[in-house]
Length: 292
Image (tube, rainbow, N blue to C red; front, side):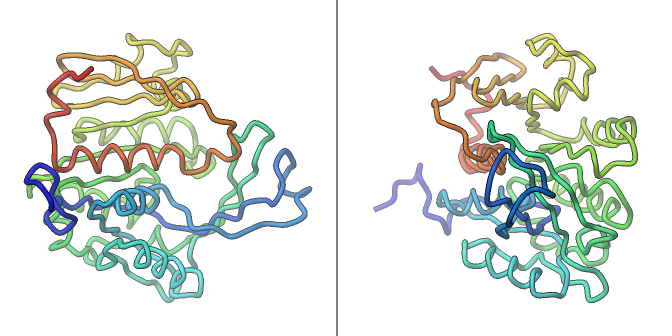
């Protein structure tokens, strides 16, 4: 029996993720360069899609909006979303462009570096007129990153989707998910990431992104709060093995992490965001009440 405070999946609010989904090629060994790796395993990737799957696996309702290539990889990714219970009504397929690929280098400490193949890839070609506006309007939380801001027409599709979701009353959730190699320059990345900053209700940045956006190497409350804007409800700064810090207009604090031996950190931040949004979508009191 389900209580009124813990709705069944059918009653839960919908988290809609917008952006890229791609294939990550992960080396079979860590601590070597791409050219030195003896083999790669293909894995589904793309931060917004990872978040949608995380929400669904935690018992929530999730949908993905984006564009894939009309190729084997694209249909494989769509199938993975469906298999994981993610609503796929927002997916478009492009016959002229391939699904994006990323080769991931795993360092010996579990951190990673990326090499992308998208010239252009299908996700970059999503147009505003291809958006499933009915699906977007049904979102209680609308989540996105910044990669979809890099080029047109996807940037315009991103802006339109964000506007429609906001007008329909959704909370806007933003994880910039900085990937410097995809941007023309660091300056352009900073400018475009910040261009939609004041639209978001919830923002999550890593310590690396905090330093990039502020230019301050000191990761403390003052640096974090320099990114605060008046209508923001929650700012999160993730600190890897050191947990995270959280900020609202009335209180702030930190949460320690569990100690683990890091093997591969790919998708860790997306899992964090998925778990957070799955909690917030039906209980926004956590944004207003400090809990021990």
